[in-house]
Length: 311
Image 1: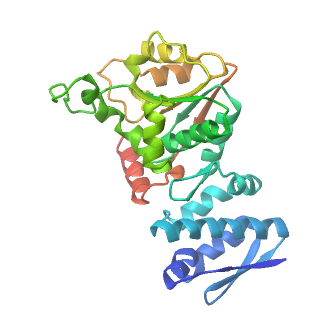
Image 2: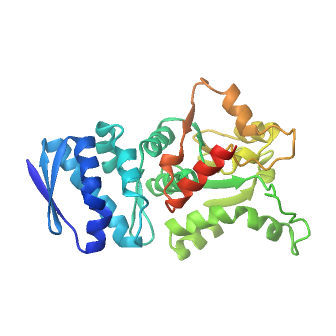
Image 3: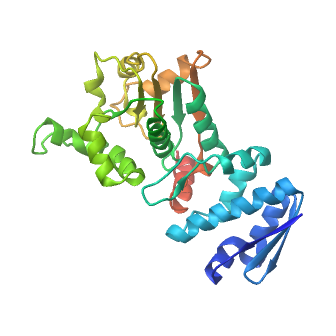
């Protein structure tokens, strides 16, 4: 069986084929296909399942490339997807939702697919990995998808108000104005996924609630998706408090990066502690993401590597 994929510009040819067609060689080896370039057309030949997988993979890459001009390094993109070709085919089909601009949201790597699967199957999911691996974004997308399907009636977003080296205590304004800077990343992900009018309506109606972690004490959260971001900056008692807020028909997603802990010295991270004592607990799932799952600017992967080597 063979199938063709069309490229629209020389930029796309360079991005997909690489220097001396090295990217095509990687695809050939990873998926057991033969790709023959014919100008701005790629002919993919092989077994039907492999041909279909590679064609859809190229189409997804090109769709992202045409939308923003970059999707990260193509080599890393292919290696991440080709670790398990059978699972790659499932990922390609695993659309979560579309953004406000109509762009598809889907797991781009095997670890991201593991995260999405875990959210579907477990009541409590811990996503642990470096910045840019899609932890918050995929969690938000899954929560909004659940909300749209009527599986849950509320989304609650929270994070600890811990200063990352700066002292914000003397900022002007009331309590809400002081804590808003800590919550801004949650709003950013939300606004990228949903149009502004819908955002405002959901926030005003209380369907989506964004609160500092300290405000969660004493609550029981039912029929809700509860997302805790920056969990590495919780204390052990805060993590215990958060995990015991879960009410009937609810699930929680806890995201964090254990390499960026901003707690005072000798204060143990609640995320580190939980990952040690909750392994194997029924209903709890830990998903680890790494540098190969970074979907921000490709330089972010190099930065993460540099810091890991220095440490």
